[in-house]
Image (cartoon, rainbow, N blue to C red; front, side):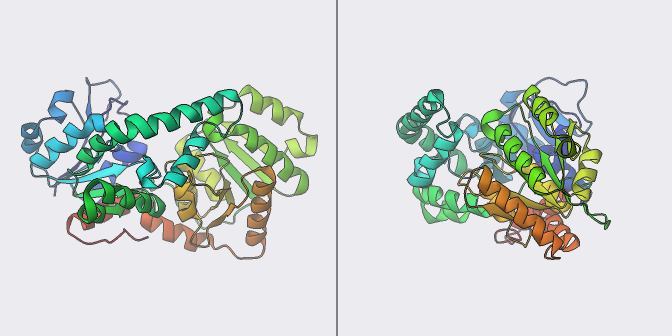
Length: 399
C-alpha cells in the first residue's frame, strides 16, 4: 500500500509539521507499515524531514504528476477551499482514492444551518466585545450571504464532489456537513461525509501513575479573540481562591497580562498557579499525565488538539458549550468531562468544580479514558480508519 498526505500550503516541513495534522497522519501510515510521504508546495527548506516531498504548486494541479506517484490514496488537507479545487480534481482524475479533510466545525456556510451559522459568526467576531467586534460581525454576515452563497459555495461544492470521502473531525461537524452536502449534491454527496478526527502523537498516553488535583491549560494566549486569556485568568483566579488544594499549570506563551495577573495573586494562590511558557512535547505530555482536568476557555476550536492530547493521557476535559466547540461536545461524551452550560466565568467555574468533584468521588477512570480515546485518536489508529474507509467499511469511524 502507498498512501500520501498533502497540504497545498508551503508550511515548514520539520518536526512541528510532523507532530500534527497531515504530517502526523503520514507518520501514522508509516507505523502501520504503509509507504507514506507528505506533499507540500514550495522549495526545499533546510529543516525539511526526509519523508516530505516538496514540489511546484503546478504539479499539485496535474493529474499526470499524481498518476506518476503510483498511489492507492491521498488524504488532502485543503479545508474544502475553492482555490484548491484543482488540486482535488487532479488527484481524482488520476484515479486515486481521495479523502478530503475538513478542519472545522462544519458551519462554513449559511446553508449548513442559518441559526448556528449566525451564532458562529458572532463568536468569530469577538462576541460583541466592543464596537469593532460588532462591525466584524456585520461584515462576516454580509460576506456570507452575498459572495459566500453565490461564489464560494458553488466553488466549494465543486471541490467536495471530487472526494471519495469528505472527512469531518467530529460527529457534530459531520452533521452540519451532511446538511450542507445535501444542498450541494444531494444524498450521494451527503453519504460521503464521515467522521475522521485529527491524529494525536503516540507519546500522549496514560502511564498508570496517580494523578494530582491539578488543572492543565494550554493555548496561544496572545490570541485574545479565540483563546480568551481574560476568561482564563478570571476563572483560574476564582478556582484557586475557592479550592485550597487545587493546582493549575498554564502552558503556552506568557503574555504581559498573564504575568501581571499571576504576580498580583495572593501568595498562597500564586504558589499554586504555574506559568510554564512554551514547553516541549514530552514536557506537555507529562503535564497532562499528571493532571486530572484539562480546561479550555476558548471561544472556538476547529478540533482542539490539546484537548485530544489530554484525553489520550487520561485527563478529562472542561470547556464552554458552544456551536463553535463541536469537537468538545464529542470529547466529554465518554465519562470524560463536561461542558459549561453558561459560557461565562461563573459557569466555567461551576463545571471545573464539579469535574474535580467527579475525580474525588472516583467517577473518573483515567486508564479507561485513555484507552477509549487513544484507540480513536492516536496517529496509527486514525490511519487505520482511513484505510477502512477506502475499503468501504468504518461507518463514522469508531464514534
